[in-house]
Length: 291
Image (cartoon, rainbow, N blue to C red; front, side):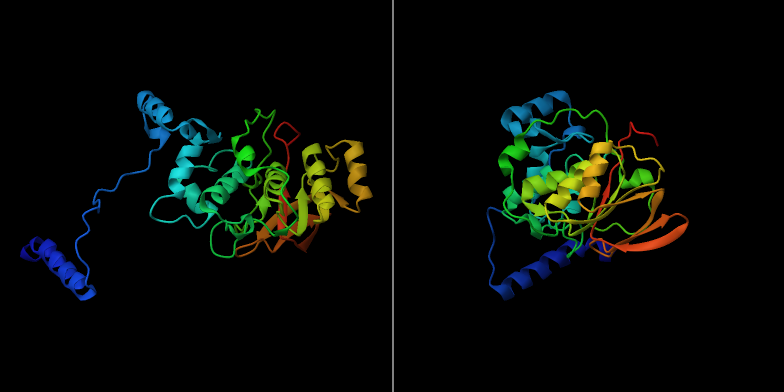
């Protein structure tokens, strides 16, 4: 139609008027072509090899499940549209969307945000403003950020089960991590991932995580498992008990609550539903263990 045909001319005329009112002149360095970020999974082998030769960071895989490299993450962090949360980086690159749901790579990606954006770990949100990934200061980090990012990861014998595999209903706040992720966050940042923790799982990984968090000053309300018989070693069970951590056998987490940061969970223990306030839920059960 004539109206549609004249739309570009109208837009140019309007832009000229706005520029004139602002006293703005032409910008000869303006590039009107949007250059998409390189994503390795969309590139052929030759293009990938050329990119890695130009920038070796593209050859350093950070998210092993989805094969997302350090180079891709750094590129996304420095685009014109700012990255304001961990989930924003996830949606732009595909990192943390694999079977482990970020259990193996979240801490490294947070470290990349700290290094590239110059932000403090405690100021990074998971999604919306106020959904902080970490809870409070716990002293200096025990790992160098650069060394932590660069370190090669041995292939794990088994993955921890994620919250998604348990199909726990409720909101999706910050503060729900696997044991490995919680410990990596603590080691790398020097910040505790929560103040009031509930550990769901009684395997060795979960029990060791509960003890480590307690030693770091986190109040661990309980270690629980839906099974009636704990999967972890007697020695680690005794370590938990010596720290005053309650052991809840035959207990199931049935709901998660919290707008931005985890506020509470609901568990069913011995047929009775109970709401437990906490800002950290560690969901940890090795896939090799009895389901």
